Amino acid sequence: MIYFWIGLVVGLAIASIASCIMRRRSCAGTLRVDRSDPDDGHYLFLELQNMSDVVNRRYVTFRVRIEDFLPHK
Image (cartoon, rainbow, N blue to C red):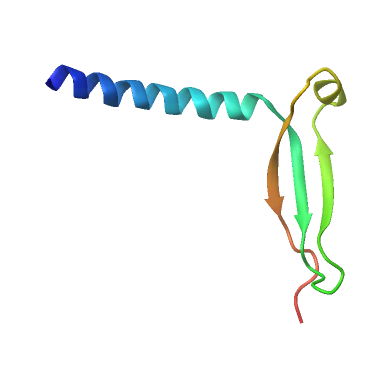
């Protein structure tokens, strides 16, 4: 029974590390969200690392960064 739990913990650790590596590698760019103007809504900016990554894939993933450029009054 103890070998089962050790194997389970080691397997989860390896899967978690592999997931983090694949997530970084498969990311096609950054989706930047600017919420600085509450009256006008959110502005979205797409920052691509390589255009061919987006064109050659059926599905793409983006990192999301929320940055407010104008301070709230």
